[in-house]
Image (cartoon, rainbow, N blue to C red; front, side):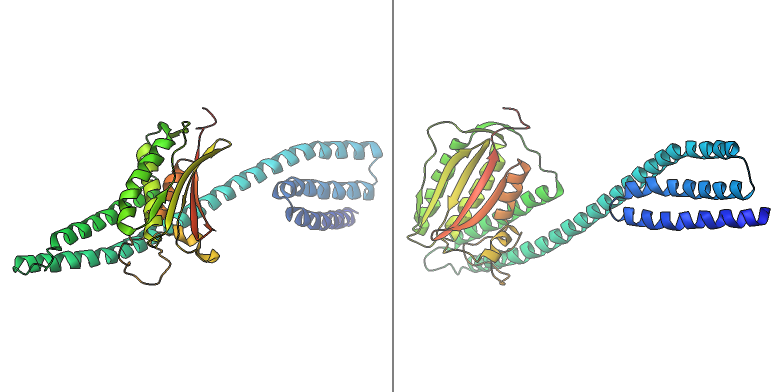
Length: 339
Protein backbone atom coordinates (compact mmCIF):
# COMPACT_ATOMS: atom_id res chain seq x y z
CA UNK A 1 0.00 0.00 0.00
CA UNK A 2 2.85 2.38 0.74
CA UNK A 3 4.32 1.86 -2.73
CA UNK A 4 0.93 2.44 -4.37
CA UNK A 5 0.39 5.61 -2.31
CA UNK A 6 3.83 6.87 -3.25
CA UNK A 7 3.16 6.28 -6.94
CA UNK A 8 -0.19 8.05 -6.72
CA UNK A 9 1.38 10.97 -4.86
CA UNK A 10 4.15 11.22 -7.46
CA UNK A 11 1.62 11.17 -10.29
CA UNK A 12 -0.50 13.89 -8.70
CA UNK A 13 2.54 16.05 -7.95
CA UNK A 14 3.85 15.67 -11.52
CA UNK A 15 0.45 16.52 -13.00
CA UNK A 16 0.13 19.66 -10.92
CA UNK A 17 3.78 20.54 -11.60
CA UNK A 18 3.38 20.21 -15.38
CA UNK A 19 0.28 22.41 -15.40
CA UNK A 20 2.05 24.91 -13.13
CA UNK A 21 5.16 24.94 -15.33
CA UNK A 22 3.05 25.77 -18.38
CA UNK A 23 1.34 28.55 -16.44
CA UNK A 24 4.66 29.94 -15.15
CA UNK A 25 6.06 29.98 -18.68
CA UNK A 26 3.05 31.86 -19.97
CA UNK A 27 3.23 34.35 -17.09
CA UNK A 28 6.97 34.85 -17.58
CA UNK A 29 6.34 36.12 -21.09
CA UNK A 30 4.49 39.05 -19.52
CA UNK A 31 6.12 39.56 -16.15
CA UNK A 32 9.27 38.06 -14.67
CA UNK A 33 8.28 39.11 -11.17
CA UNK A 34 4.88 37.43 -11.38
CA UNK A 35 6.45 34.26 -12.77
CA UNK A 36 9.01 34.19 -9.94
CA UNK A 37 6.21 34.56 -7.38
CA UNK A 38 4.08 31.81 -8.94
CA UNK A 39 6.94 29.32 -9.43
CA UNK A 40 7.49 28.44 -5.74
CA UNK A 41 3.72 28.33 -5.24
CA UNK A 42 3.52 25.69 -7.97
CA UNK A 43 6.11 23.61 -6.13
CA UNK A 44 4.16 23.81 -2.86
CA UNK A 45 0.88 23.02 -4.61
CA UNK A 46 2.52 19.98 -6.20
CA UNK A 47 3.64 18.81 -2.78
CA UNK A 48 0.17 19.49 -1.37
CA UNK A 49 -1.44 17.45 -4.17
CA UNK A 50 0.89 14.55 -3.43
CA UNK A 51 0.15 14.79 0.29
CA UNK A 52 -3.63 14.78 -0.28
CA UNK A 53 -3.46 11.76 -2.58
CA UNK A 54 -1.18 9.93 -0.15
CA UNK A 55 -3.35 10.56 2.91
CA UNK A 56 -6.46 9.38 1.10
CA UNK A 57 -4.75 6.29 -0.25
CA UNK A 58 -3.60 5.44 3.27
CA UNK A 59 -7.05 6.16 4.71
CA UNK A 60 -5.86 8.86 7.09
CA UNK A 61 -8.77 10.60 8.79
CA UNK A 62 -9.98 13.96 7.58
CA UNK A 63 -8.79 15.79 10.67
CA UNK A 64 -5.20 14.72 10.15
CA UNK A 65 -5.48 15.52 6.43
CA UNK A 66 -6.69 19.01 7.32
CA UNK A 67 -3.77 19.51 9.71
CA UNK A 68 -1.29 18.51 7.00
CA UNK A 69 -2.90 20.84 4.44
CA UNK A 70 -2.96 23.76 6.88
CA UNK A 71 0.73 23.28 7.63
CA UNK A 72 1.45 23.14 3.89
CA UNK A 73 -0.67 26.23 3.21
CA UNK A 74 1.25 28.30 5.77
CA UNK A 75 4.30 28.05 3.54
CA UNK A 76 2.52 29.61 0.55
CA UNK A 77 2.95 33.29 1.54
CA UNK A 78 6.56 32.68 2.57
CA UNK A 79 7.24 31.06 -0.79
CA UNK A 80 5.56 33.95 -2.59
CA UNK A 81 7.65 36.53 -0.70
CA UNK A 82 10.89 34.67 -1.38
CA UNK A 83 9.93 34.33 -5.04
CA UNK A 84 9.27 38.08 -5.25
CA UNK A 85 12.58 38.91 -3.56
CA UNK A 86 14.49 36.61 -5.90
CA UNK A 87 12.75 38.13 -8.92
CA UNK A 88 13.58 41.66 -7.81
CA UNK A 89 17.21 40.66 -7.29
CA UNK A 90 17.37 39.04 -10.73
CA UNK A 91 15.79 42.14 -12.27
CA UNK A 92 18.33 44.38 -10.55
CA UNK A 93 21.24 42.25 -11.76
CA UNK A 94 19.86 42.16 -15.29
CA UNK A 95 19.35 45.94 -15.27
CA UNK A 96 22.89 46.51 -14.04
CA UNK A 97 24.25 44.14 -16.66
CA UNK A 98 22.30 45.95 -19.38
CA UNK A 99 23.49 49.36 -18.14
CA UNK A 100 27.09 48.17 -18.03
CA UNK A 101 26.80 46.72 -21.53
CA UNK A 102 25.26 49.97 -22.79
CA UNK A 103 28.00 51.99 -21.08
CA UNK A 104 30.70 49.82 -22.66
CA UNK A 105 29.03 50.26 -26.04
CA UNK A 106 28.89 54.04 -25.54
CA UNK A 107 32.56 54.07 -24.55
CA UNK A 108 33.47 52.07 -27.64
CA UNK A 109 31.43 54.40 -29.83
CA UNK A 110 32.96 57.51 -28.26
CA UNK A 111 36.45 56.09 -28.71
CA UNK A 112 35.71 55.16 -32.31
CA UNK A 113 34.30 58.63 -33.00
CA UNK A 114 37.29 60.23 -31.33
CA UNK A 115 39.76 58.25 -33.41
CA UNK A 116 37.91 59.08 -36.60
CA UNK A 117 37.71 62.71 -35.59
CA UNK A 118 41.43 62.91 -34.87
CA UNK A 119 42.11 61.29 -38.25
CA UNK A 120 39.88 63.82 -40.02
CA UNK A 121 41.36 66.84 -38.28
CA UNK A 122 44.90 65.56 -38.73
CA UNK A 123 44.23 65.28 -42.45
CA UNK A 124 42.68 68.74 -42.56
CA UNK A 125 45.64 70.25 -40.75
CA UNK A 126 48.06 69.00 -43.41
CA UNK A 127 46.63 71.37 -46.02
CA UNK A 128 47.24 74.67 -44.17
CA UNK A 129 50.54 73.32 -42.85
CA UNK A 130 51.69 72.52 -46.37
CA UNK A 131 50.67 76.00 -47.52
CA UNK A 132 52.46 77.69 -44.63
CA UNK A 133 55.59 75.63 -45.25
CA UNK A 134 55.60 76.43 -48.98
CA UNK A 135 55.14 80.17 -48.41
CA UNK A 136 57.72 80.21 -45.60
CA UNK A 137 60.27 78.48 -47.83
CA UNK A 138 59.53 80.98 -50.61
CA UNK A 139 60.09 83.87 -48.24
CA UNK A 140 63.24 82.24 -46.90
CA UNK A 141 64.59 81.90 -50.45
CA UNK A 142 63.75 85.51 -51.18
CA UNK A 143 60.86 84.69 -53.52
CA UNK A 144 58.03 86.83 -52.17
CA UNK A 145 54.62 86.95 -53.84
CA UNK A 146 54.06 89.71 -56.36
CA UNK A 147 51.33 91.26 -54.27
CA UNK A 148 53.08 90.70 -50.95
CA UNK A 149 50.22 88.55 -49.65
CA UNK A 150 52.29 85.72 -48.15
CA UNK A 151 52.39 87.06 -44.57
CA UNK A 152 48.63 87.65 -44.53
CA UNK A 153 47.96 84.23 -46.04
CA UNK A 154 50.26 82.56 -43.51
CA UNK A 155 48.40 84.28 -40.69
CA UNK A 156 45.03 83.22 -42.19
CA UNK A 157 46.16 79.59 -42.43
CA UNK A 158 47.46 79.75 -38.85
CA UNK A 159 44.11 81.12 -37.69
CA UNK A 160 42.37 78.34 -39.56
CA UNK A 161 44.47 75.71 -37.81
CA UNK A 162 43.87 77.40 -34.49
CA UNK A 163 40.13 77.20 -35.06
CA UNK A 164 40.41 73.49 -35.89
CA UNK A 165 42.43 72.72 -32.78
CA UNK A 166 40.09 74.80 -30.61
CA UNK A 167 37.07 72.98 -32.00
CA UNK A 168 38.73 69.61 -31.45
CA UNK A 169 39.55 70.43 -27.83
CA UNK A 170 36.04 71.72 -27.17
CA UNK A 171 34.45 68.62 -28.69
CA UNK A 172 36.81 66.39 -26.72
CA UNK A 173 35.72 68.03 -23.45
CA UNK A 174 32.07 67.64 -24.39
CA UNK A 175 32.40 63.98 -25.35
CA UNK A 176 34.46 63.08 -22.29
CA UNK A 177 32.13 64.91 -19.92
CA UNK A 178 34.92 67.12 -18.55
CA UNK A 179 33.33 70.40 -19.62
CA UNK A 180 32.63 72.52 -16.54
CA UNK A 181 30.05 75.25 -16.93
CA UNK A 182 30.43 78.50 -15.01
CA UNK A 183 26.73 79.35 -14.85
CA UNK A 184 25.50 82.77 -13.90
CA UNK A 185 22.51 84.95 -14.89
CA UNK A 186 23.29 86.34 -18.35
CA UNK A 187 21.23 88.57 -20.63
CA UNK A 188 21.12 86.56 -23.84
CA UNK A 189 20.36 89.77 -25.71
CA UNK A 190 23.91 90.93 -25.00
CA UNK A 191 25.31 87.73 -26.50
CA UNK A 192 23.14 88.18 -29.59
CA UNK A 193 24.28 91.80 -29.95
CA UNK A 194 27.93 90.70 -29.75
CA UNK A 195 27.29 87.96 -32.32
CA UNK A 196 25.65 90.46 -34.68
CA UNK A 197 28.58 92.89 -34.38
CA UNK A 198 31.16 90.16 -35.03
CA UNK A 199 29.15 88.67 -37.88
CA UNK A 200 28.86 91.99 -39.73
CA UNK A 201 32.66 92.30 -39.91
CA UNK A 202 33.02 88.91 -41.62
CA UNK A 203 29.84 89.37 -43.66
CA UNK A 204 31.10 92.60 -45.21
CA UNK A 205 34.10 90.74 -46.61
CA UNK A 206 31.86 88.09 -48.13
CA UNK A 207 29.23 90.45 -49.44
CA UNK A 208 26.54 88.99 -47.19
CA UNK A 209 23.93 90.99 -45.30
CA UNK A 210 23.41 90.37 -41.60
CA UNK A 211 20.03 91.27 -40.15
CA UNK A 212 18.52 91.04 -36.69
CA UNK A 213 18.55 92.85 -33.39
CA UNK A 214 18.44 91.98 -29.70
CA UNK A 215 15.08 92.55 -27.97
CA UNK A 216 14.65 95.60 -25.77
CA UNK A 217 13.60 93.56 -22.73
CA UNK A 218 16.25 91.49 -20.96
CA UNK A 219 16.16 87.75 -21.58
CA UNK A 220 18.07 86.33 -18.63
CA UNK A 221 19.19 82.71 -18.44
CA UNK A 222 21.58 80.84 -16.10
CA UNK A 223 24.32 79.94 -18.60
CA UNK A 224 28.05 79.94 -19.13
CA UNK A 225 28.39 83.10 -21.23
CA UNK A 226 31.66 82.03 -22.83
CA UNK A 227 30.39 78.61 -23.93
CA UNK A 228 27.06 79.92 -25.22
CA UNK A 229 28.94 82.64 -27.14
CA UNK A 230 31.09 79.90 -28.67
CA UNK A 231 28.00 77.91 -29.71
CA UNK A 232 26.34 81.00 -31.19
CA UNK A 233 29.53 82.02 -32.99
CA UNK A 234 29.76 78.55 -34.53
CA UNK A 235 26.19 78.77 -35.82
CA UNK A 236 26.75 82.25 -37.26
CA UNK A 237 30.09 81.32 -38.85
CA UNK A 238 28.50 78.27 -40.44
CA UNK A 239 25.66 80.42 -41.80
CA UNK A 240 28.06 82.98 -43.29
CA UNK A 241 30.27 80.27 -44.82
CA UNK A 242 27.33 78.72 -46.70
CA UNK A 243 25.53 81.89 -47.79
CA UNK A 244 26.50 83.24 -51.19
CA UNK A 245 27.34 86.91 -51.80
CA UNK A 246 24.18 88.97 -51.87
CA UNK A 247 22.43 86.59 -49.48
CA UNK A 248 21.18 87.29 -45.97
CA UNK A 249 21.86 85.83 -42.56
CA UNK A 250 19.25 86.66 -39.92
CA UNK A 251 19.83 86.32 -36.17
CA UNK A 252 16.89 86.59 -33.78
CA UNK A 253 16.10 86.01 -30.11
CA UNK A 254 12.64 85.01 -28.90
CA UNK A 255 11.22 83.43 -25.75
CA UNK A 256 8.70 80.70 -25.05
CA UNK A 257 7.47 78.89 -21.94
CA UNK A 258 10.60 78.68 -19.77
CA UNK A 259 12.95 78.72 -22.79
CA UNK A 260 14.84 81.18 -24.95
CA UNK A 261 15.31 80.57 -28.66
CA UNK A 262 18.18 82.04 -30.67
CA UNK A 263 17.59 81.44 -34.37
CA UNK A 264 20.17 81.78 -37.14
CA UNK A 265 18.72 81.65 -40.65
CA UNK A 266 21.02 81.44 -43.69
CA UNK A 267 20.78 81.37 -47.47
CA UNK A 268 22.48 78.03 -48.14
CA UNK A 269 19.83 76.92 -50.62
CA UNK A 270 18.49 74.13 -48.43
CA UNK A 271 19.69 70.65 -47.48
CA UNK A 272 18.10 67.24 -48.24
CA UNK A 273 15.93 66.17 -45.32
CA UNK A 274 17.88 62.92 -44.88
CA UNK A 275 21.08 64.91 -44.33
CA UNK A 276 19.75 67.52 -41.91
CA UNK A 277 20.60 65.73 -38.68
CA UNK A 278 23.95 64.58 -40.08
CA UNK A 279 25.02 68.22 -40.00
CA UNK A 280 25.81 67.70 -36.31
CA UNK A 281 28.07 64.70 -36.86
CA UNK A 282 31.71 65.68 -36.18
CA UNK A 283 33.62 66.04 -39.42
CA UNK A 284 30.61 65.73 -41.74
CA UNK A 285 30.46 68.43 -44.40
CA UNK A 286 27.89 67.04 -46.81
CA UNK A 287 30.61 65.89 -49.17
CA UNK A 288 32.87 62.90 -49.53
CA UNK A 289 35.90 65.16 -49.96
CA UNK A 290 38.36 64.77 -47.10
CA UNK A 291 39.90 68.21 -47.54
CA UNK A 292 37.60 71.16 -46.80
CA UNK A 293 36.95 73.82 -49.37
CA UNK A 294 38.27 77.31 -48.86
CA UNK A 295 36.55 79.04 -45.99
CA UNK A 296 35.10 75.77 -44.66
CA UNK A 297 36.35 74.43 -41.36
CA UNK A 298 36.87 70.90 -40.11
CA UNK A 299 33.17 70.23 -39.64
CA UNK A 300 33.26 70.52 -35.84
CA UNK A 301 31.42 73.78 -35.18
CA UNK A 302 27.87 72.47 -35.32
CA UNK A 303 28.72 69.40 -33.22
CA UNK A 304 30.31 71.66 -30.60
CA UNK A 305 27.29 74.00 -30.66
CA UNK A 306 24.88 71.13 -30.06
CA UNK A 307 27.09 69.70 -27.31
CA UNK A 308 27.22 73.04 -25.51
CA UNK A 309 23.45 73.45 -25.79
CA UNK A 310 22.82 69.96 -24.38
CA UNK A 311 25.28 70.59 -21.55
CA UNK A 312 22.99 73.49 -20.57
CA UNK A 313 19.87 71.31 -20.82
CA UNK A 314 18.99 72.84 -24.20
CA UNK A 315 19.23 71.78 -27.82
CA UNK A 316 20.24 72.87 -31.31
CA UNK A 317 17.93 71.93 -34.16
CA UNK A 318 17.88 72.65 -37.89
CA UNK A 319 15.18 72.80 -40.53
CA UNK A 320 14.89 73.97 -44.11
CA UNK A 321 13.25 77.39 -44.24
CA UNK A 322 12.83 79.72 -47.18
CA UNK A 323 15.99 79.89 -49.28
CA UNK A 324 18.18 78.18 -46.70
CA UNK A 325 18.30 76.59 -43.27
CA UNK A 326 17.18 77.82 -39.89
CA UNK A 327 19.26 76.73 -36.90
CA UNK A 328 17.66 77.21 -33.49
CA UNK A 329 19.58 77.23 -30.22
CA UNK A 330 17.19 76.58 -27.32
CA UNK A 331 18.24 77.31 -23.74
CA UNK A 332 16.23 76.94 -20.53
CA UNK A 333 15.41 80.15 -18.70
CA UNK A 334 15.11 78.25 -15.42
CA UNK A 335 17.76 76.07 -13.78
CA UNK A 336 16.52 72.93 -11.97
CA UNK A 337 13.03 74.35 -11.82
CA UNK A 338 14.14 77.45 -9.92
CA UNK A 339 14.28 81.05 -11.16
